[in-house]
Length: 512
Ligand code: ADP
Image 1: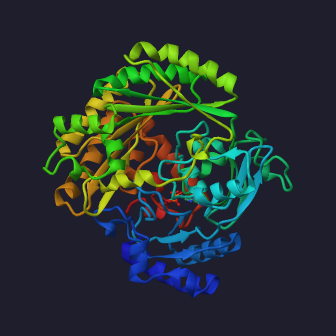
Image 2: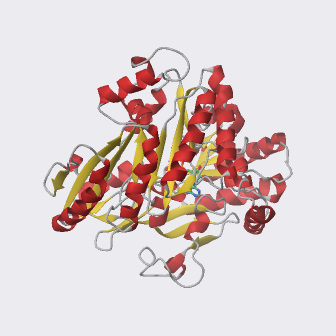
Image 3: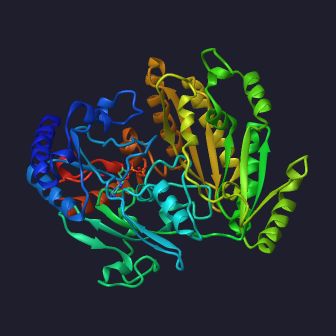
C-alpha cells in the first residue's frame, strides 16, 4: 500500500465517518491535521495523520472499524493524546486517521472498599482526582510527572509514577476492548457476563489478556479497571542527594536491597541536576553560551538550587508506628553514605493535603521543554537495567558520552526498583535549532544501539524509533516479531489498527 492510496482510503473513511459521528466530530482541515501531529517533532510531517474522528461510544467505534475495514484506512486510537516525548497524538504511519477517544470521559465506577476504579479512555488524571476529592474518597492516585494525560492511555503504555502503585500497567485489572474486526471482549473475570470480580481478580480462568492490550495494536480499549491505593494514616519523607556523577552506582546499591525487602514503598528515582534545573527555568538564566553546560556553571546551579548531582526522594506510606520502624531501618542503612544526619518530615491525616505525598496531578515537569528556549521539545530514551550500581554507572558513562558528542546537556533519572532500574533519559531540545534537528535523532539511534549491544532493552519508545527498538528484540532471528506479526494478521487481517505501533506491522505494510 502506497502513502497516496492510504491517504485516499483515509479520505473515503473520513467522508463516511461523518455519517456515523456527524460532521462536527470529523476533523480533516489542515489545522486539524496539524493539531493531531506530534507537537514536539522537528518535522511533524513525518507522522502527519490524514485527520481525526472523535468517537463517543463503543457502537461508534465498532461502526468506524467496519468502514475502515471496508475502505482500507488505518486508525490510530488515542485516549487523551498527551503521550509527549513518545509521539503525542501522532501515529507511526503518516496518513493514518486518529481515533480520538478523549470524549469518552465516564468514570464508570469507584469502589471505595475494594480500592479500584473503572474508567473510559478519555478520563484524565485531573478528572479522576477531582472526583475522588469531591467524594471525600479514601483512595489515592498514582500520577506520572506530567499528568495531562489519561489514566487509561498512561497505564496501557506502562507509564510510571513515584508512588507505591507507580507501575501503572501493573495496576490494570480487567479491560474491555474492541478488536479490529469490531468484536467486543472483556478480559479476566469480566469474560463472564455479570461477573462480580472483573476489577478485583487478576488471575481468573485461562490465559490472562490484560497485557495483550498494553503497548500493542491488537484492540481499542474502551474500559479499564485500575487498582488505587488506600490512603495511609501518615507519610514520612527523606530527601537525599549525592555530589558526583559516579555516585550513582552507590546510590543504586544503597536503595535496591531496601526496596526488594519492602522497606521502601516505591521506586525512588535518582534525578540528575539538569533535570531539576529544567523544571525551574530556562538554561539561559545560568548560561548563554553554545555547547554543553560548562562544569563550573553546573556547580553554580547545584549550589544555588541547593541540590546534588543526583537527587532522590524516599516516601513511606502507612500507619505511623509501622513506617516509623521502616524509616529507622532505612536511615540506619543509608546514614554511612552521608555526612549530615538524614532527617525526615512527617505528614498525618488532617495536615494540608498538598504535603501528603499522594499522587496529585500537576504539569510542572513540562517546564523542562523550555530549557533551550525557542519552541521546545523532548524525547525519551528509556532502557531497563538490572538493579546494580556498577551497571548503572557504566550505562551513565556511555549515555553521557553520547549526549556530549551530540552537544546536549545530560538529563537522566534512574528509578530504582527491587530488581530493575527504569532509566528515563530526557533529551531536551529547541525545535528551531537545525543542529539539534540533526543531532537528536542520531543521538537516539546511538543510544538504542549502545544499549542493545549491552543486552539492555527499552521499555517504551517514541514513534520514530519503534521499528529500531523492536528490531533489537532479536532472539532466535526475531521470533517475537514473527509471533506478534502472526497475531496481528489473525486479529487484523486488513491491517486497519495502529500499523507499526511497537514495530508490529500488519501484512499489507510489512514490505513497505
Ligand atoms: P495519554 O493522553 O494518557 O498520555 P495517549 O492517549 O497519548 O495517552 O495514549 C498513548 C498511546 O497509547 C497512544 O498513542 C496509543 O498507541 C495507545 N492508546 C491510548 N489509548 C488507547 C486505547 N484506548 N486503546 C488502545 N490503545 C490506546
